Image (tube, rainbow, N blue to C red; front, top):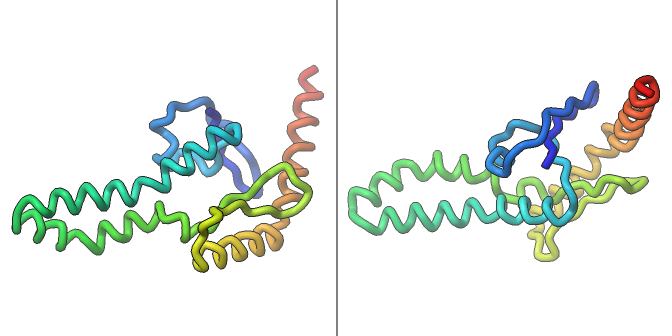
Length: 146
């Protein structure tokens, strides 16, 4: 698996990483094959439900546990929001000459709205032009090394 940092100004190769580093936010972009990417995506989407279940299980042990989980509920909700796919809608399919956002077949209206907003942002930011320029930069860099 390869992680890279990417911004409009520059892309920086960070290096190969272990799976444990994927959810830690060490990179903005993860480059991998489609199967691996889908497994990572599905895993990340399962995190909120698993954690909610664990907290409910913990809360059911005693009234004190229930009170503690209750006091933490707002904080926990904010943390788990980062993992809710609906807030992102979908992910861009790169390598096509256009803007394509891939989402779940069972996407909610909120997820679909956020897919449309993401596509609009990608158009405004001219992401395809940015990618094309970066590829040209890489080709030029590689040709200099020959």
